[in-house]
Image 1 (cartoon, rainbow, N blue to C red):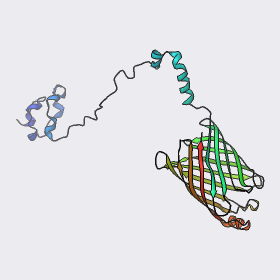
Image 2 (tube, rainbow, N blue to C red):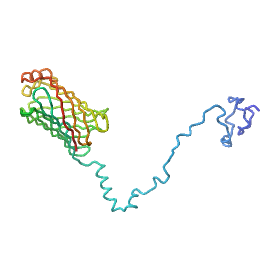
Image 3 (cartoon, rainbow, N blue to C red):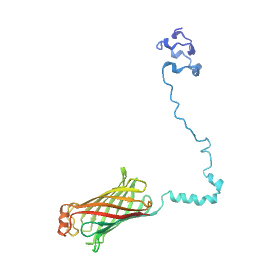
Image 4 (cartoon, rainbow, N blue to C red):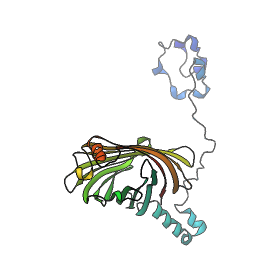
Length: 301
């Protein structure tokens, strides 16, 4: 029977191969009385719809129907109170103290061997902190060449980034106080960045940019490339700093974590002084290009 003459609601009697769909009056068909389960939808060449993924162990329907503190029913509210308080204190915005000796090392070089430290830490919550830093270096048997301490207010301004402002005091060489503003955080690909501007009480403007990356080789061994760039807006002869690029350091350290908090390391670092800073170094009888072989320890708690 031609499709145009087929009775509405009698799809079984249709010969789809001979159906003239253009001639079919779909408006006259009673779809509500059709038995779609009896239809062979695949015979027209169309792929069946995907049933979607199957869950091997779907959650039971009772999974979200229990009381909010079900453990109280088993252990008692008094026994659970201490655990619940500890959970609140260790997973919220609470104050804590953190200290890190990023570099505490001995440096072996041509001429007098030396030492260096780079410490920092904070006390505060996730948004507001008091941050402190100290860096210094010198040669064995001689007076400390550089020693600085910073006291900073730190405000979290973005995920993994703090805006910092405060004071830096130089305690070696000419007595100098600096106002500090900077930013410290973690950029994509896990580079740790610390950048700061320093304005001394004499009006000298300098800047420092540090970047380092912890690259894990094994569960206990890490390799850490590191770079530091120091800039100055003007000559500062009393500090031996020239305008432009003052100094540039690149180094790499291989660290072994005895435990996460304690990790000795070895490495090598190259330092260059540029422009007028190199001239000031030569005038003091120093080499503007120095290679240091280092051994030290990194620790935090």
